[in-house]
Amino acid sequence: MEFAPETLSWQSLYKLMIGAVLPRPIGWISSVDGSGQRNLAPFSFFNAICANPPSLLFCPMVRGTDSSPKDTLNNVRQTGEFVVNIVSAPLAEAMNLTAGEYPAEVDEFALAKLTAIPSVRVQAPRVAESPVQFECKLTQIVELGSEPGGGSVVIGRIVYLHVRDELLIGTDKIDLSKLQPIGRLSGNSYTRLSDTFELTRPPSQITRRV
Image (tube, rainbow, N blue to C red; front, side, top):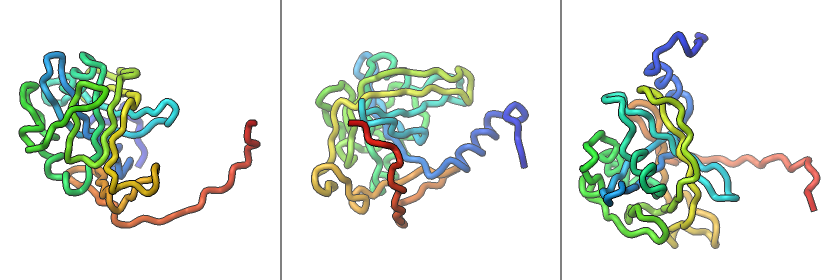
């Protein structure tokens, strides 16, 4: 089959995209609004961008139910800050609870019985149970549509990192067997990191700049 995007509904395009672009890492984003109301929600349109400056992105879509921006996006617009909490396998059920659509006044930390702890350089709290947390300051929001199926690219600069000591190999490598990350598939499906393999990258053919 071949498709021109304009011949499909956004719902069908979404299903094809998330069924092919996988597994996707999960960014569990904690934020607060201007009055301090807490929010916690997972996003599988999430990834790292670069290390200098250290930057991450996540992409909240417009809600299909009421065509409104998600609370996380509203909060980041108000405060310019957020925290990316990494989801390990033991946190899967709690993460799934926070994926529901709730009124803005609902505190997902309390809903999922998670521990909110202060961050060092941003207002948004961290998930204490998460093994890795990135405190971020907003760099840019790229708007890509305001109708259902549309969304935004939220880019943040990492201003502080928290990594559990037992995850570290040396000072800068993470033991995946201890992190136990999970990935998002399509529908209700997720995956654990249970099978890995290694490939040696070809050596660079570019002359190193002095």
